[in-house]
Amino acid sequence: MLLHLSMQISDYHIATELVGEIITDPLYCSDLNIISETLSYIRTIALASLECDDDSQSIGSSLDQPFDTSLLRRIILLFHMMATSRLAVCRQSVKVPEELIDLLEHCSEEEEVDIIPTEKEEAFVNLISETAAPSDALLTLNGWENSAQASSVIIPSLRTSLILGARGGMSNEISCTLLQIRQVREEGADSGDLDDNELNKKRLPNGGIWQSLLRGDVQIDK
Image (cartoon, rainbow, N blue to C red):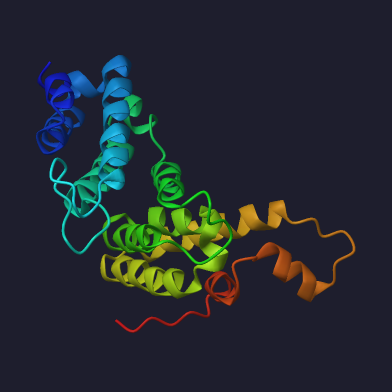
């Protein structure tokens, strides 16, 4: 199989092109074994792209980014293609926000916990907001553990996603996503003996931007 060979020689640009052909071919993307193997390759390429640095020549990292932007953009689009496939076997094999959250966690530095985001995290969050479907971007940012320390990155990224969604006529999809985020946060909050202010803080630990989004108070300049 050409995909397997391209992975063996670490030619990830060709590999992503072959993945795109596989997940758009009904013969291949209806086979669970092929889809599982292909998804494994996508994840491998994504991690390899994140781990390269500015001096890496084998992956092709750009000089102004801490990872291979073009490859990661392709990866995000491939996840989206799989998640929106007409075939259930392919579509049900991946949840884009979960994949992106996993990659975001790989961008962090273990020795630097609960501080400002790393350069790689900031760059990847920006890439997600510019590339992923707006609903996937919102769910990813909501599920990112480090978002509470990253308001300076989260707010412009949210704005980018919301603007792209509005321009693309995806207002209903975004509204459904925000409702989903609200429901998850409310289910996770123990309303016990908390007053309204304390409950809101517990429900929305990431700060005012999420409160504003969920109330529908955010205004976007188009």
